[in-house]
Length: 403
Image (cartoon, rainbow, N blue to C red; front, side):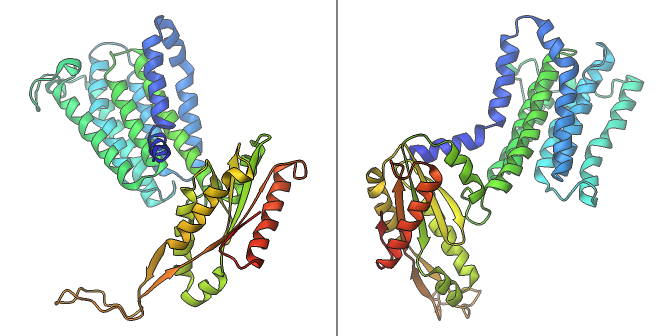
């Protein structure tokens, strides 16, 4: 339970939360303003450029538009102090967080597509409006510096006008809701980018602090694209487990003491042929979910087809036998329902439904395990030994753990 909770926290905080926290700590610890000024000169556009290239390469139109928005606002906030700078800051405050939150609500459909160009227009269209405001240096937005829409501002945020607080609150809430609902890396990146943008827009006019926070937002978005690319390459889409491509990296990191188990779903081909591939996919997901919660510090990987590998760093074969037996028993005791093809879509008037062909199915697994020892000295040899143990389990009748 504790491990599951920590994984959830890490999912939300890494890397976006850590990047924004690092920016906050860096700003607080930077006693010499020249340090931040030097950082704000060339690095932001290097970060924005790298994030934009990643977004373009991976066809992430939303991220490209968001990075462009951050870069435009960073340029606007660098204007000379005075009425022009104040108008730029006010316009940026009212535009940037809502733009980022709106982009989080949409989906990626490639850059040079109708939707991708529309997302870019969300950034490019408001820019001329800001330019006209700066040119005229009018006072059209001055009312936002005085009005109170949500009552008196509270202690820490007293220096921020209420309309801006309302924009920040709504934007962060929308971005957080999207991140919670979709549970994807890019949406999580947008949430932290909105937070970074709000922090940037609370800094004093002309301060390099704004640049640091906007740069952090761009870095978060770029990292979210990299993380998504990594997951696509090293994470199995069907089961959610690390794929076989990720296994060699895990094996290289192993030290002198470890065990590896190979897990195979019994009679899966016959099961698949009888019930169909959709039901077969349900079986794979169910077994993968159990493997993902294996005890003993094991990490499960989808090896291929109906076969999985579980790596136990720092554990001997004898130490993991009870964990593997518990895993085998848990899968054997699990059932899922296959609903009949003639099952009616609507609910009967009497509240009772007949389900012709409804079946409760169970599956079992065979497991082979081996450890590093004087005979099997490398991870590859241990993996082959575990595979041989798996076939011994099959020959012995399946639904068992063999060494």
